[in-house]
Length: 230
Length: 237
Ligand SMILES: Nc1ncnc2c1ncn2[C@@H]1O[C@H](COP(=O)(O)OP(=O)(O)OP(=O)(O)O)[C@@H](O)[C@H]1O
Ligand SMILES: [Mg+2]
Image 1 (cartoon, chains in turn cyan, blue):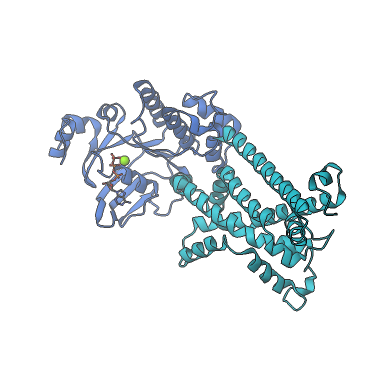
Image 2 (cartoon, rainbow over the protein chains, first blue to last red):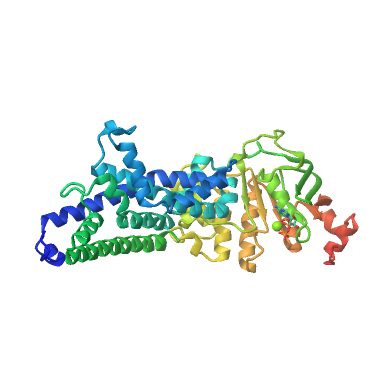
């Protein structure tokens, strides 16, 4: 990529390097959202339905983790995965997997906290009916998550927004290696520091477009679903 | 429906519910036996809802005991309640019934249609339950309660917000259900309805059981002052 080529030209000419960057960005962020959802939704739902000493503290910490600085998360994962770290033998540092792990750490608290709120609100509404129907704990979680599924899409989107936008964590654990761990955000950071502003701006526009498209798709799916299920 | 006697009679012995400084139910002793419907009456705040919830097993007692068919730990499988303000699941009308059926072990699809027809909602099965009118939701909630094939059915002011035609429809269903041997225990502010449906009447006031007797005796020869006043439409204070 040269400084004279604009991102628009790269897109129009089907530049494979650019597509690799966009593709990796999507794979990393969407995988992280998926992993974070698998952790965060059940955790948030359980937290909504259980009462135990220290629960308020857990909720406060969870809410605070929504604002966890990406560089701090990146540093923590770096220490875990680095050669001398406890998981160093996995050999994951500076790989896309490491980036997915780091973003999962960033996104899971968001999904868990928003799920907790959504499920708890629905639970206060459903509690009597589910108790009257003698629904057990697992059935309750399943029912609430299912009936809140359209609201939970918003939680997933918030998580995706955070993952797609962040650069601090993945640049630390991924290393911004060209053709291997370079994503849109890390490329933007690099190109900007190199002074290649047109390319950085072009990549930024591509990123924003992708985020808008994904939000539009999710919004449409939510609308259609709500019309059907009420 | 099967002969449904396992949970009966429901016996409340000195049932007392205290919330904070308020005694909501105050030493109520009452036996709900198989047979004609039992109707709870009393002014707002008398404790009708609390009594129904306790008899359903939802509200724990502070003092006293409740037994179902002689057992204090009877599983609530053959009990159903229609709340004063029923909550529809965010699903279609049919799925709401299906959900209640899923908690039992009954064959589904035909039974859903049967229940929808029973409450006069045939053809509305695919509509989102929350988009139904208030009266339709009330009827759907009745169908959902009946889906559990209850031996005992608690109804909390289930016709309070319905027009006369819908009220009659619900009363007809209650009569039919009772005729099949289901024990109905219902609260109402409609004394006409209490006369029409009640086999026995329970008058509650400020959490206490004031009078309990066969409907005819209760309305023709009330024993207590409170009952006399209540029947005459005077305010109980
Ligand atoms: N959890 C609670 N904490 C405190 N007070 C309560 C609680 N639940 C009910 N009460 C009070 O207990 C009293 C009886 O309530 P309940 O709902 O059983 O009355 P009700 O006879 O069903 O009245 P209505 O005809 O208005 O439905 C009311 O004064 C109510 O405010
Ligand atoms: Mg009430």
